[in-house]
Amino acid sequence: MPSPEPSTATFRRVPPDFRRRVVERFARRLQAEVTKGRPFDCLLTGDAELRRLNREFRSADCATDVLSFASAGPASLGDIAISLQRARAQAREFGHPVEQEVSILMLHGVLHLMGMDHEADNGRMARAEKRWRVRLGLAPGLIERVRQ
Image (cartoon, rainbow, N blue to C red; front, side, top):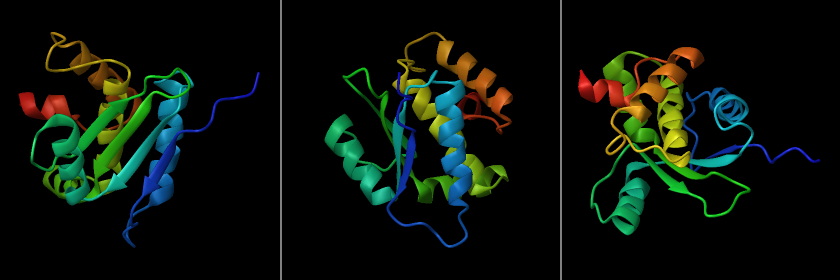
């Protein structure tokens, strides 16, 4: 049986100081450990595109840090979009590298792709995010920050 396609990280523009390979390796690690081999695609772009996607798919006319779009088919979990502008600002705010912030956002998005919803699951996603965050060596995650 052929192995599944690898998860991808696609960049609209890669800032010169951004360590792209760190994020690409993390996407493959999420696929191996969290999604149990199911691939996903991650677009890293800017606030304008996240705002457009948020408006188009969620009727929310504002930029956000991460959006998830689950796939209807079995081959892929779906797609994630991350704002590098938001990731950079949040990394500064929380005192860690932007690549770590992108990894935190990617984990959050993957958990959504796996059907979790922190707004309606009585803490199930928060517990899963914290467990994976610790296991993957990441700083506090999105849900944890909101609750602090």
